[in-house]
Length: 169
Image (cartoon, rainbow, N blue to C red; front, side, top):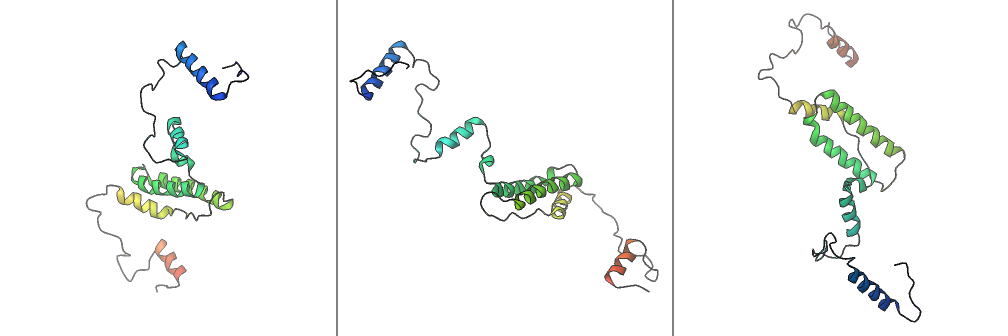
């Protein structure tokens, strides 16, 4: 279509002439999708439908289109759902720390809608991971203190009592 429209001819007839010449040359033969309905026909008119279709064809996740706070909230929800699949508690805590770093970076310089994004609790995620792990059938007797109540506590128990202000004599 490098030729120019002749003077005295309106655009509509010139375009129709170009199309009929291209049909005669066979330019429209064997095109992909020939004879198939146009995608999106019959749906209510959506002005952004072409953009979503283009994103889908490009292989980009629609989550990439979310504003940062919504994307961070979504990542927190996905992390909570995928915690049982982690190999160790350390991996869970590392993933939570990484997500919390992203949340804190966004909080320092919020771009997008002003939505609050809560930090993810690493202890709650670790507890969730531990609850999902298969445990021993009989955990054994629990250690609730020294065997002899008259004997002073040692180790972490003693330091805990000192901090709380209750000393055992």
